[in-house]
Image (tube, rainbow, N blue to C red):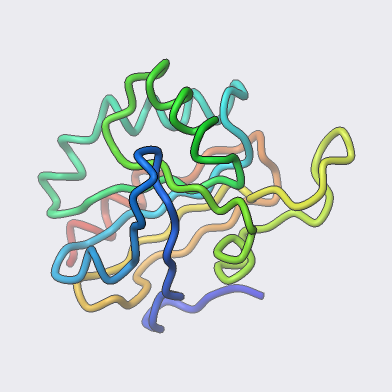
Length: 155
């Protein structure tokens, strides 16, 4: 299942690393970049999220907030956020419902790990509609950050 641009983004309600409930509605009136990533502390995920950390001002300048979602627990994500000094919320999709709703879900991942988020990127506009959707089948690939920025610049 893939989500079409122009359609409403699936609602979510997930806990962040401070155990605070975060919902899609919290971002109404702002653009939102949603990154799904397979697992905290893995090399490609660390590189991806550190790149976002280092470029967050660019996204904020495009009136966009950023969240990153994985199936890790809020406790693991808290340690990961602290170690990597990430400056945006990490949300725990421990129950795997949001990853499935966005079509960013592996039934089977490496090492026979079942139920892991695929690497994916979405841009949700101020009204809650999807303006960009990219789900990668290979966890070794990174989202097209230039296309994400181009999409935000048009909003």
